[in-house]
Length: 277
Image (cartoon, rainbow, N blue to C red):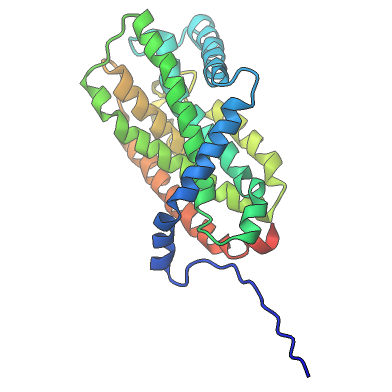
């Protein structure tokens, strides 16, 4: 009589929270690989490669400068209007690209997720890194604009890394929410472009948030990216650029909440990813 035994493969996260976070470090090489692969795909297999990361924000800046700076003649906080716009385009494009990349990241790596165990946070995390590379490349345009207009930033530019961290937290938090929701509800792939487009209109990218009436400033700051953009402008523009501290504090608090809740929801849904995908 022959006994036939079946071997069942169970893919699960670390048995304890401490093991899970240790696994993030243990699988860091996979993180590097995924990020590097996506960077190569983005820039190597396109007709214009890196130029696309420069052309898109540059054209958007020109349109906003003409519409808001030349036609509407909105205030520019004492700096050339293209610099005002691009100081906001940098964090906005980073945030918007991260949402788009993260939302599809788990679906795009379905074969890997269904076969091998690793902390799933690595997947949307690597997608945010790809968007951050776009952010760094787009920074070349800002440097070129500063040189063109002979604009010299003040000491505040030293605080820019702090606001980059805040932008990173906002991008990661929003990306985790959308990536997890997109696995469970595939309709989110159609909703994300609308969220990005709508967010561009309600965020102070083409104009300064200082034009918002005082009584509405705090309410306007419920959009967490408002604080990120205002922080970038305060650091880059110097001079007349001012931070509305109550609104900035509220926005940063919402970014922290978005980041923490994003990790919480992603971890809660993570065990079912391999089954649903």
